[in-house]
Image (cartoon, rainbow, N blue to C red):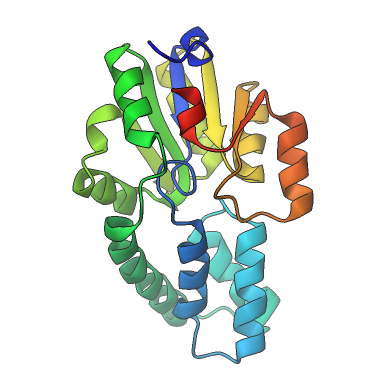
Length: 219
């Protein structure tokens, strides 16, 4: 295979958003659109929060919206309305967003080298699987996992299927780094499309096994 660095691993775990597909900023805006009926200052603060907690699932974030931003009691009907709005926006987004530079070449290379490839994402699992089929990316992966499971739970499932194999996690957020650290995996931090704060970016850089701008650097 062409990537000397990745040749040492049997299992490569990818985050999706901002690593495989360039949707980070679009998804942050989608959170705002889903709650657009609220005052603009509340929406803006919520979108900023979503940027700083990227990788945490929508199921958590929309619950936080009630308690931390709207300052109102949780309402199941409204919560489901937000989730539906957001899901509808994301469906369109995933079909039109750009695949990140080098993504398909790297996936093809790794697949042809008999590496086991997985996705562990904070995005909705069913939605991801549909999007990957639509973009013909599903053919490369042994498994695609997402919310409502946590990123930690997704990673745990992958490792249980691949015991005694060396794995690496490629991500662009603090939540990715924490999942890798929890299971003592090497972590590759991909920085180009991250929407994290400068402080979070620096933390990921300082604790990563390797820092890259895009997946092209791993080809």
